[in-house]
Image 1 (cartoon, rainbow, N blue to C red):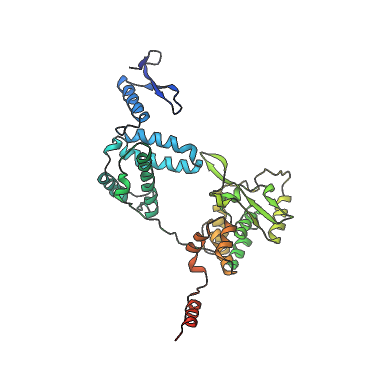
Image 2 (spheres, rainbow, N blue to C red):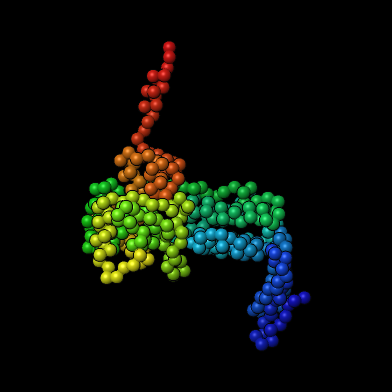
Length: 357
């Protein structure tokens, strides 16, 4: 059995042999086990996972699943998935065999999750609970598809939450103007919020903008990247969705404002981030501006809602708005239906006209 003692370190290590996807025979070395028993247990789990054996522990399966998903997901999406597994799934199901987890087990886990409180002493939101459950169900779906698990116990148990709608808040033009006047003393803040309000782009898209994204002759703004701070590092990723890659027209006054802002830099190239601030900075400025101006507090993301509501008020269609903000038109219709003028009376009148006696 390929389990050996490391006499120099006083620990044990495993030399496990397996066959790769291309038929090549490989060897994996795992060191640092305190006891021989631990080394043998790891080897057993590794071989079960390599063969797709459903008797592997859930924690072993979870490691394999996360390793498989990592190159297929954006980094921030993967880190969210991994955090949910480490915090809520592996501690609860880790030592159970994959094949032995039942819908009843899932229901008991759900009841426990429903009783948990966040750092403020409040129960987890229904939307967050649904997200956690969806991650578990996605893992079992993977096991069904690639490991031959007969059924998904999480799907059979049913969800423990629902996708809730957060209250949609937005500013009118008058409210925004009051706010923007209050933060004019800080150019980075003022121009950042000008772009957010008058274009409707996402916060991450704003923070990734470079001078090369602006074409002042054509009066356009290119959105093809997003900024994230992950594990303490600045990371530029692709936008949220494929639809998010877009070119949008910007107004004359916004073109002039961005030119003014660029002129404040001593040295600026096409790849320099125009707004080299953080999301936390923008949040603090939002709080400061609301306090000074007296306008109601909204989230940074609500500036996107504000821009969309402004376009709806101007009479633009869901299709045109969706193209500008990088959404599907069905999302605009569903999410903002209450803001569009009602056509029910017009429908009834037209139906009356078609009635023949």
